[in-house]
Figure 1 (cartoon, rainbow, N blue to C red):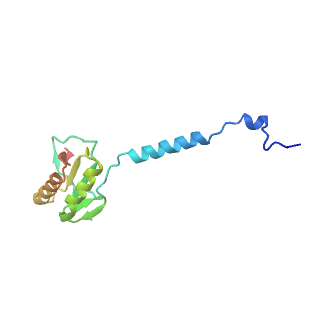
Figure 2 (cartoon, one colour; figure 1 turned 180 degrees about the vertical axis):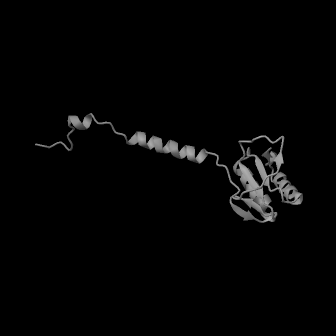
Figure 3 (cartoon, rainbow, N blue to C red; figure 1 turned 60 degrees about the horizontal axis):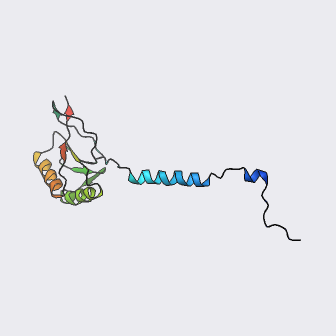
Length: 135
């Protein structure tokens, strides 16, 4: 007489297998993390100039800062002026609809601000804003 290879009992048949549902939840989690747009911070505190017409802008994907000593900061690290265009091109390729906000300290020079704006336009970024504090 042959024995069956495996016998089902009533307890095993009535159980619900949660593995497929957990797989779907983890796949959705990975999907949302990968497709999320992360805001890049500059990494330093800037003393922004005041403007009576300043308006808040919520959707800025690229932020670059110029401190009082005319040093340029991007992604919490100090960058050389010659590499700004290449870094902005890379960030613009990653997010073509991204906007740029330049956070220039009120003690920084206009020359450095204009150079960063030129590098951004050369990189293909057309939406550029300068950060200011509301009075």
